[in-house]
Image 1: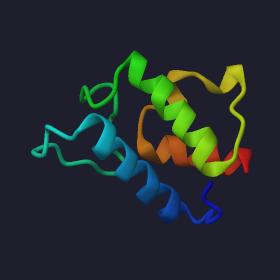
Image 2: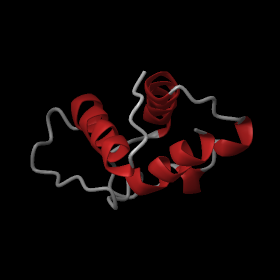
Image 3: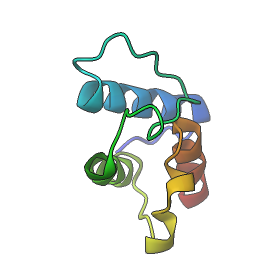
Image 4: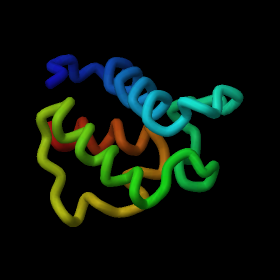
Length: 87
């Protein structure tokens, strides 16, 4: 579990996870906190489950069913905001 709740540390953890899990063979993709994860085909519906597990395990938060909506996972910045709201 990560104890650093600085927004930049959360972003870096999310960026590293997404690069490793979903972009390992797509090095040409530029990933930023504002990248549109679904629109840019970086992550899909199955990948969201992996991302939820990563968020809960890494940041020690529990996401509620009403957290699992597209707007909370559209970008890394949106996921960061969700994490900060649950800490």
